[in-house]
Length: 118
Image (tube, rainbow, N blue to C red; front, top):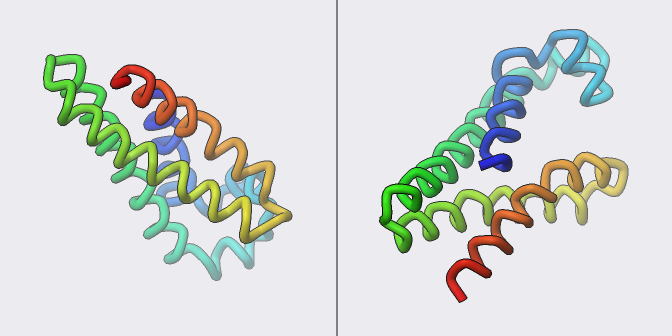
């Protein structure tokens, strides 16, 4: 659930507050860069929100006893979050600290779901 909550925060930063001073500082962007990439960030933020929703639904289903469906959704959501972090880590060496922040919670979620279903 923590991975989902982190991705809701990322959604808010990318889709709702992309040009704010705090978000620009977090992502290391100038105001001009933020304005130039606002549409891309808006779309990317919703991608993060949808991953959070899928993961959260998986947690909810599992809590209600639908363990198979819940695990499938948790793995789909958290696994996609983890895969995106791996792509960022591999493709952008300067963004590796962000990739680690983005990927640690989904990695833990995937491992925990895997252990639970052994």
